[in-house]
Image (cartoon, rainbow, N blue to C red; front, top):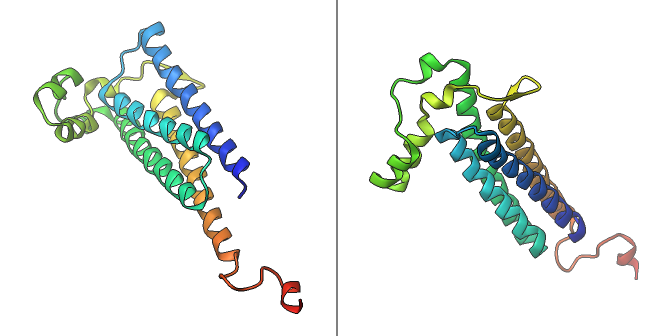
Length: 183
């Protein structure tokens, strides 16, 4: 895989993530939709994904760096996929999924450790079950889920491509093609 190809893929993923992050802030501040706790978790993973892709696009890594960056992108996108999937499940059957109400995010982070607060945020609350905005009959968590799944597929494909390229490369000391053996 060439350096230009990897940089352009990271830059495209960064651009798409930044666009999605900008759209979420637009919907919050311009339209007036208040994000729920799972929306904030998804936004956190989207920010991590943007940071990883942006750093990789600027850095232009080689083999080991590509592995590391794609692994970080995969972890961030899987975390976002999990949070979005959880919210889609809550929205599909809110009565069965919500046994207890979660407090507001400000209350969680002021009195609890970060790990406990993130666990409670991941459990969701009654505000996570509301479908307040749709586009093409898909809610925000469903759009988020589609985005995170697409980025996960891209990261897995690129990692498999790196593995395939490593397997195709000859071992050190061997000729790179048959013609080199006769010289």
